[in-house]
Length: 157
Image (tube, rainbow, N blue to C red):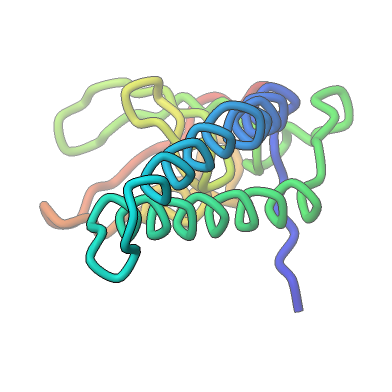
């Protein structure tokens, strides 16, 4: 069974553009590399040809994977998201109880995660622990550095 991925409209568009780039720019480029290598003669000893064919296989695999992801994605409507509990696209303000510091994360699908932008995946340790929780809850999260306690102080979109 194929897994449904929930995405923001921005994440979906970014993914569509990436697939389009791979199909319209990268694919023809690799085809040209293969043609150029083929013109050089004996294919059995042609390292350029082998490298280009391998690159083509990797590219086609990536395109196929991203096409599958797009076809099994559902775009979330921010206006219909319940902010009484944490879910995908929730912007969550937390207090790290260990160091008494406020942090803000947006919960996103795995392929949209970007820690530098404060976007954490639903499959990350913190994301998993937060899903479904409400304001006022204290969540204990096991991370590589140990256990961190977070208090949820705000949920918004």
